[in-house]
Length: 582
Image (cartoon, rainbow, N blue to C red; front, top):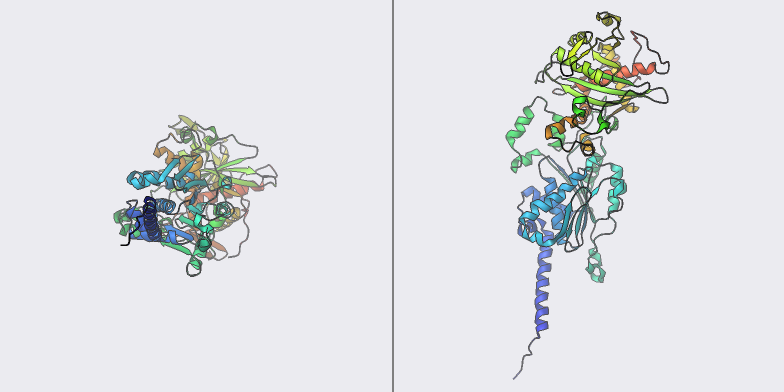
């Protein structure tokens, strides 16, 4: 009789452990190939079809770019990918970067709130986390981690296997190439790579870029084109897609009625909608008068100078109106429009304040430190605002279009004006460049500070060409974009304690500057003899462009007299325009 030897307890335990590990390996392999199923089975997260596809492609490819309409939840999807990758691939190191650190923090907030609160399995995976301004990280028990880094030179010491750049179009290309991409040094090194038979399984690091679309003249468009070229190359693992607002409507993430309402608004911007919601890159026309590249590079002013009613909301003295510097010219300009925006009338009164400072080569550099728009005002109301700001900002000159309804505003300015807001009576002002208009002022010895502008075809030709050269020669400085400004405003004392409406009021000059850029690059032109006729597209505006053009025109006139330190009344000197061939 043959006796069967009994297995020891250790052998039984080893066999059981082997079966468990085989099962773990099988399921791990399955879920690595199907991360969308892992989201549902392990984390309890249900996905839309397009989200499942994107999650799969994120995990599959080494280079991934997602151009998304607003509201599609790209931050949420990014957070889900980070969570799944860290669990399924122990020892994974992920860096999340963006121009605005708070925006990058939102990725971690999705993990520590949306996912963690709803998944007991995830609670067992996470060891520690912190989401703050100085430190933001999620640590996993298997050695994986996710950290937020600032997209600047200060983040050079970070290392990662996966780099995620949110709203990458807002990040400087040089920072991406010289700082962020240098994070990706050594790939993830699991212990099985030390065995000879598994050495070929070395993983590639990943780069993931998320954003809405922007202008074709921006570097981000060239990056997107490079991804498209590599997408069709079977030897490379690149992926790029753009999902417009229609898929958001189809999947119930956006209301069709809401879209229709937004499109019906009088100030609806088709260009902004196409970029933000339509996933369409916007290109400057061939031979366009102003390009995005030439105008946007001049957005360098970080601090706005606010009128008293806004600066009083803040505790920081740096936002208040400074005294005039030596030889500084502070010019307030206005493009006059008094009717509220309608589909058949899309004008608004636009005010810009320019602090023109002299340079060492006897020129002026314009700094547009404040701007605002008004609709539906009458003549007296607009004249009062211009006169109030002229006094409040310590301006030296006013640039005003006096043709048409602008003449009514001019006639108000050449009289004493009582301000019920301040209780002050402002003295009359007179014209400095045209005797006919100066004679309309009946107040003796009224300061001659108003430049009466009569926008003839020749004047408009010279003004627009001069303005374009001013941008090209960096003689006009504008406020930075509102996204960068939002981060800086948080450092201003008193800003964080404001309610939402007051915060918007503080942000508006930066937003109006962005709208100025949009107006500039949307201008169309045609040649009329020797002159260029400039006009806006249907539904677009050019009130901000006109105001800035008048302002810069005055700066050019004053620049001619800077070296002489003199100024003659009723000067009709030609504009500082450069001949340009079209």
